[in-house]
Image (tube, rainbow, N blue to C red; front, side):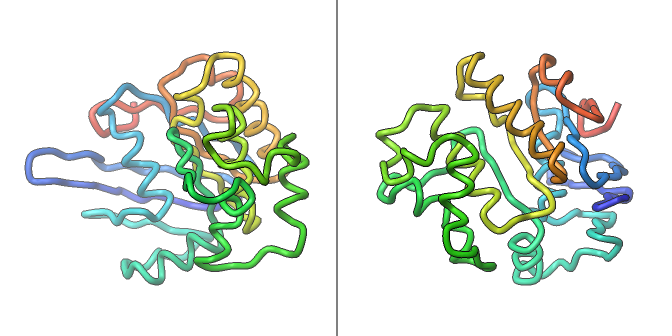
Amino acid sequence: MIIEELDNVYKMYPLTTALNDISLKIRSKELLLIMGQSGSGKSTLLNMAGLLDIPTKGKVKLMGKSVPKKEAKRAKLRSEFMGFIFQDFGLIPSITAKDNILLPTLFGGSAPEGRADKIADTLGIKKRIHHYPNQLSGGEKQRVAIARSLINDPKIIFADEPTGNLDSKTGEVVMNLLRGLADSGKTVVIVSHNPEHESYADNVINMKDGKII
């Protein structure tokens, strides 16, 4: 089943074309890996698929319907269908891990009572959710970020270099967690420049100069 589709998508800026005629189908319950060096356009593609940006030309379709350009409508779709994981974790330092996990519920959607604790338990950080980010290791921070991405029970998880700030051993743990999410029925889209991550993926695309090669 096709959950999202990019159809002849371009993203142009005055001095460069970041995405050049991209057509891509993202299938339900797969782990899709987007590979490429810095400047290849892979993060721009992730932002486009994650409805964080709009194309200069072309269409993005979610569940068979064209995505509107108005930010308020795209934000609603993001809150209903998507979760995000970032390389720098994106945690707010002044609130606890649990409150960081619950952040998406403030901007749309709601989580059943105890869902944050349940997810944290599944990810092995339940004992740490009342700690602040500066009291957590890099791996624990990324698990909090993964828990946050899951709190609204999204259909698609987007991860931008999710192991970029982690040592290799912790990175393997995070990749196994993301693989497990795909195995449990989530669609997972990961941007990476690490060829070792290909072994976790159901589908791999490579990008160069804004194109899929």
